[in-house]
Amino acid sequence: MLKAYVIPIGGGIRKITEKDEILDFSRRTKVLWIDVREPSEEDLLFLEKEFGFREPPKEVFEDIEISSRFYEGRDYLYAIFSFLVQHKEEVFAEPVLFFIKENILITLRYNKIVTFSMFKRIIDRRGLEFHYPDQLMVELLNLEVERIGNRLEIIGKRIRSIKKQIFSEQSTEIIKDLAYYDELNLTLRESINEKLRILQKLLRSTKINNVTKRELKLIIEDLYALADYTSIYMEKIDSVQESLLGLITIKQNQTSQVFAFIATLFLPPTLIASIYGMNFDYIPLLHNPHGFWISVILMVAITGGLLAWLKLRKII
Image 1: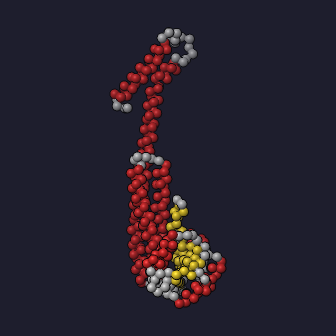
Image 2: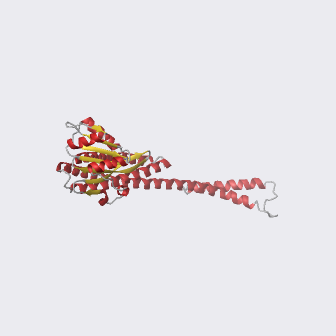
Image 3: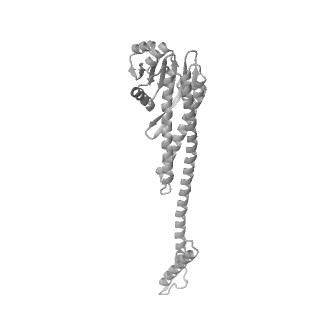
């Protein structure tokens, strides 16, 4: 699907979808943003013919090497950044290609990304105005960085909540929550590190104007601060996991002690019952009319004496 967005003088945003109209605006507007999602072959041919845009191989989108995710040509550059996508309980990084040439910004993606929808609404609501296509890219990245910060804030609050909760219960749900937030924190950290590497390349590019470079430096500072938070939360999650494991171990030990105590109490009666269950002809008190009650009293007395001794030693 191919959609273009014109940023009129005075701000705001206007969507156009007809290819003729896109070409017309590309010749007479300051900034034209073409957002491509799940493009058809016809869309890609149109973009290549009119703007020199070529879709990179699919493996380039998944490659973590900086040389694959950033390239500067004679009159264009492209960079691939990851944006966070949440699907049910899973959060993953979705790559987005940014292609800049003259007054054109082309973004290519294969999934719905919340940041893009939010960005379009913000432009329209605030009446933002852009003079360069790289400004659009930077504002999109800035919004994504804000969303990363919000997610890290949620992680911090949730970790503090779980830390208090583990002392009252040690459930499977808590373990699942810790695993989820640990994975989310790791995903955010990887996304931050990837952005830092590519933004450093953009800062050195001659195709990025100086106003945009100042914004890039601010984003880089924010990313470094967020990277520090991911390290802190990683340590906190490890600490909570160790505390949870310690509490589970203590609980298991207490359960084992109960079973050991019960087994100890029943050991003397079991021994007596086993002796009198032997198949010998001559056993003391075997034919005594009071033998049964004597053995029961003996069992109770030994068990009671064992209990008194355990209490005296403060074992129970």
